[in-house]
Image (cartoon, rainbow, N blue to C red; front, side):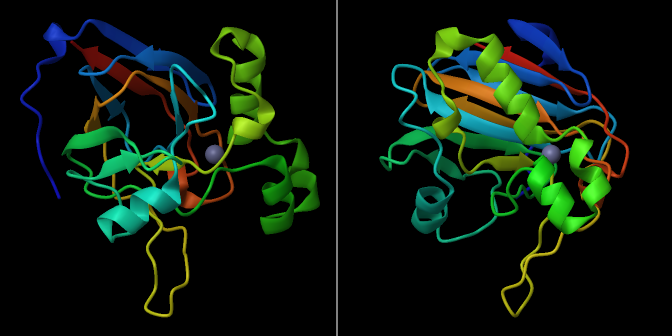
Length: 212
Ligand SMILES: [Zn+2]
Protein backbone atom coordinates (compact mmCIF):
# COMPACT_ATOMS: atom_id res chain seq x y z
CA UNK A 1 0.00 0.00 0.00
CA UNK A 2 1.37 3.39 -0.97
CA UNK A 3 1.73 5.59 2.11
CA UNK A 4 3.70 8.81 2.49
CA UNK A 5 5.58 9.76 5.62
CA UNK A 6 4.96 12.90 7.65
CA UNK A 7 8.62 13.00 8.75
CA UNK A 8 10.83 15.77 7.38
CA UNK A 9 14.41 15.03 6.36
CA UNK A 10 15.78 18.02 8.29
CA UNK A 11 14.46 16.51 11.54
CA UNK A 12 16.47 13.28 11.13
CA UNK A 13 19.11 12.56 13.81
CA UNK A 14 21.35 10.81 11.26
CA UNK A 15 21.75 10.58 7.50
CA UNK A 16 24.07 7.98 5.95
CA UNK A 17 24.87 7.42 2.29
CA UNK A 18 25.53 3.81 1.24
CA UNK A 19 27.40 3.74 -2.03
CA UNK A 20 26.53 1.15 -4.65
CA UNK A 21 28.14 -2.15 -3.64
CA UNK A 22 28.90 -0.96 -0.10
CA UNK A 23 27.37 -2.08 3.20
CA UNK A 24 25.88 -0.50 6.33
CA UNK A 25 25.75 -1.98 9.81
CA UNK A 26 24.35 -0.12 12.82
CA UNK A 27 21.78 -0.10 15.61
CA UNK A 28 18.28 1.38 15.45
CA UNK A 29 16.67 1.65 18.87
CA UNK A 30 13.11 0.74 19.80
CA UNK A 31 10.80 3.64 18.92
CA UNK A 32 13.15 5.12 16.32
CA UNK A 33 12.15 5.27 12.66
CA UNK A 34 14.45 4.22 9.82
CA UNK A 35 13.94 5.35 6.22
CA UNK A 36 15.70 3.68 3.29
CA UNK A 37 15.69 6.12 0.39
CA UNK A 38 16.19 4.90 -3.19
CA UNK A 39 18.02 7.98 -4.46
CA UNK A 40 18.22 7.19 -8.17
CA UNK A 41 15.59 4.44 -8.47
CA UNK A 42 15.57 0.70 -9.24
CA UNK A 43 18.13 -0.13 -6.57
CA UNK A 44 17.94 -3.21 -4.30
CA UNK A 45 18.82 -2.95 -0.60
CA UNK A 46 19.46 -6.49 0.67
CA UNK A 47 18.71 -6.24 4.38
CA UNK A 48 19.00 -8.38 7.51
CA UNK A 49 17.78 -7.47 11.01
CA UNK A 50 18.98 -8.87 14.34
CA UNK A 51 18.01 -8.35 17.95
CA UNK A 52 20.65 -5.96 19.29
CA UNK A 53 20.82 -7.94 22.54
CA UNK A 54 21.03 -11.43 21.00
CA UNK A 55 21.94 -11.81 17.30
CA UNK A 56 20.71 -15.43 17.31
CA UNK A 57 17.25 -13.81 17.19
CA UNK A 58 16.92 -12.44 13.66
CA UNK A 59 14.49 -11.53 10.89
CA UNK A 60 12.48 -14.52 9.67
CA UNK A 61 10.80 -14.42 6.26
CA UNK A 62 8.63 -17.45 7.00
CA UNK A 63 7.27 -16.14 10.32
CA UNK A 64 6.58 -12.75 8.73
CA UNK A 65 4.81 -14.22 5.67
CA UNK A 66 2.75 -16.70 7.70
CA UNK A 67 1.52 -14.14 10.23
CA UNK A 68 0.51 -11.52 7.64
CA UNK A 69 -0.80 -14.08 5.12
CA UNK A 70 0.93 -12.35 2.21
CA UNK A 71 4.27 -12.79 0.46
CA UNK A 72 4.88 -9.09 -0.27
CA UNK A 73 6.05 -6.51 2.23
CA UNK A 74 4.55 -3.01 2.35
CA UNK A 75 2.90 -0.54 4.76
CA UNK A 76 1.45 -2.44 7.73
CA UNK A 77 3.80 -5.40 7.38
CA UNK A 78 5.22 -6.43 10.75
CA UNK A 79 8.69 -7.93 10.36
CA UNK A 80 8.99 -10.88 12.74
CA UNK A 81 11.91 -12.74 14.20
CA UNK A 82 12.61 -16.47 14.24
CA UNK A 83 10.99 -16.38 17.69
CA UNK A 84 7.88 -14.80 16.12
CA UNK A 85 8.50 -11.53 17.95
CA UNK A 86 7.66 -8.28 16.12
CA UNK A 87 10.96 -6.51 15.30
CA UNK A 88 9.91 -3.62 13.08
CA UNK A 89 6.79 -2.38 11.30
CA UNK A 90 6.69 -0.76 7.86
CA UNK A 91 4.94 2.56 8.53
CA UNK A 92 5.38 4.31 5.18
CA UNK A 93 6.12 3.09 1.67
CA UNK A 94 6.11 5.04 -1.58
CA UNK A 95 7.36 2.07 -3.65
CA UNK A 96 4.47 -0.28 -2.82
CA UNK A 97 6.06 -3.71 -2.68
CA UNK A 98 9.26 -5.30 -1.40
CA UNK A 99 10.56 -8.83 -1.83
CA UNK A 100 11.50 -11.35 0.84
CA UNK A 101 11.49 -14.51 -1.32
CA UNK A 102 14.29 -13.96 -3.85
CA UNK A 103 17.23 -14.15 -1.45
CA UNK A 104 20.48 -12.27 -1.83
CA UNK A 105 23.00 -12.59 -4.61
CA UNK A 106 26.10 -14.67 -3.92
CA UNK A 107 29.07 -15.63 -6.08
CA UNK A 108 27.76 -19.23 -6.11
CA UNK A 109 24.26 -18.26 -7.33
CA UNK A 110 25.77 -15.87 -9.90
CA UNK A 111 27.73 -18.83 -11.27
CA UNK A 112 24.65 -21.09 -11.45
CA UNK A 113 22.26 -18.46 -12.79
CA UNK A 114 24.52 -16.63 -15.24
CA UNK A 115 27.97 -17.95 -16.08
CA UNK A 116 31.07 -19.50 -14.54
CA UNK A 117 33.01 -16.33 -15.35
CA UNK A 118 30.62 -14.34 -13.06
CA UNK A 119 32.07 -16.06 -10.01
CA UNK A 120 34.56 -13.25 -9.31
CA UNK A 121 31.84 -10.56 -9.44
CA UNK A 122 30.99 -8.76 -6.21
CA UNK A 123 27.79 -10.03 -4.54
CA UNK A 124 25.63 -9.09 -1.53
CA UNK A 125 26.75 -12.08 0.51
CA UNK A 126 30.36 -10.84 0.21
CA UNK A 127 29.33 -7.41 1.50
CA UNK A 128 27.56 -8.97 4.51
CA UNK A 129 30.58 -11.16 5.28
CA UNK A 130 32.87 -8.13 5.08
CA UNK A 131 30.52 -6.16 7.35
CA UNK A 132 30.50 -8.78 10.11
CA UNK A 133 34.28 -9.36 9.79
CA UNK A 134 35.05 -5.61 10.06
CA UNK A 135 32.54 -5.08 12.90
CA UNK A 136 32.97 -8.02 15.32
CA UNK A 137 31.45 -6.00 18.18
CA UNK A 138 27.95 -6.95 16.95
CA UNK A 139 28.64 -10.63 17.63
CA UNK A 140 27.16 -11.73 14.30
CA UNK A 141 28.77 -14.81 12.77
CA UNK A 142 28.61 -16.47 9.36
CA UNK A 143 25.88 -18.85 10.53
CA UNK A 144 23.63 -15.87 11.40
CA UNK A 145 23.52 -14.80 7.73
CA UNK A 146 20.10 -16.08 6.72
CA UNK A 147 17.00 -15.09 4.74
CA UNK A 148 16.67 -11.42 4.02
CA UNK A 149 14.51 -8.63 2.66
CA UNK A 150 15.21 -7.09 -0.74
CA UNK A 151 13.84 -3.59 -0.35
CA UNK A 152 12.71 -2.05 -3.69
CA UNK A 153 13.16 -5.36 -5.52
CA UNK A 154 10.32 -6.69 -7.65
CA UNK A 155 9.89 -10.49 -7.54
CA UNK A 156 6.28 -11.18 -8.53
CA UNK A 157 4.83 -14.63 -7.90
CA UNK A 158 3.19 -16.10 -11.02
CA UNK A 159 -0.21 -17.85 -10.98
CA UNK A 160 1.64 -21.17 -11.01
CA UNK A 161 3.65 -20.10 -7.96
CA UNK A 162 6.85 -19.30 -9.86
CA UNK A 163 9.26 -16.50 -9.00
CA UNK A 164 10.54 -14.04 -11.59
CA UNK A 165 13.02 -11.19 -11.24
CA UNK A 166 11.39 -8.25 -12.97
CA UNK A 167 12.19 -4.65 -13.68
CA UNK A 168 11.97 -2.58 -10.54
CA UNK A 169 8.82 -0.67 -9.62
CA UNK A 170 10.83 1.83 -7.61
CA UNK A 171 11.92 5.23 -8.93
CA UNK A 172 14.18 8.10 -7.86
CA UNK A 173 13.18 9.40 -4.42
CA UNK A 174 10.98 6.45 -3.43
CA UNK A 175 11.41 5.18 0.11
CA UNK A 176 10.33 2.70 2.72
CA UNK A 177 10.11 3.61 6.39
CA UNK A 178 10.25 1.24 9.36
CA UNK A 179 9.55 1.81 13.03
CA UNK A 180 11.71 -0.33 15.32
CA UNK A 181 9.73 -2.30 17.92
CA UNK A 182 12.91 -3.55 19.63
CA UNK A 183 16.57 -2.49 19.52
CA UNK A 184 17.77 -3.94 16.22
CA UNK A 185 21.02 -4.27 14.33
CA UNK A 186 20.46 -3.31 10.69
CA UNK A 187 22.75 -4.93 8.12
CA UNK A 188 22.33 -3.74 4.55
CA UNK A 189 24.17 -4.68 1.39
CA UNK A 190 23.47 -2.10 -1.29
CA UNK A 191 23.33 -4.65 -4.09
CA UNK A 192 26.18 -4.61 -6.65
CA UNK A 193 24.41 -7.08 -8.98
CA UNK A 194 24.94 -6.47 -12.72
CA UNK A 195 23.31 -9.58 -14.20
CA UNK A 196 19.59 -9.13 -13.49
CA UNK A 197 17.20 -6.16 -13.55
CA UNK A 198 16.85 -5.91 -9.75
CA UNK A 199 18.83 -2.66 -9.84
CA UNK A 200 18.41 -1.75 -13.49
CA UNK A 201 21.88 -3.20 -14.31
CA UNK A 202 23.25 -0.01 -12.77
CA UNK A 203 23.90 -0.06 -8.99
CA UNK A 204 23.31 3.36 -7.39
CA UNK A 205 23.55 4.76 -3.83
CA UNK A 206 20.80 4.65 -1.20
CA UNK A 207 20.47 6.87 1.86
CA UNK A 208 19.46 5.92 5.40
CA UNK A 209 17.71 8.44 7.63
CA UNK A 210 16.84 7.87 11.32
CA UNK A 211 14.40 9.84 13.47
CA UNK A 212 13.94 9.69 17.24
ZN1 LIG B 1 22.67 -8.48 -4.39
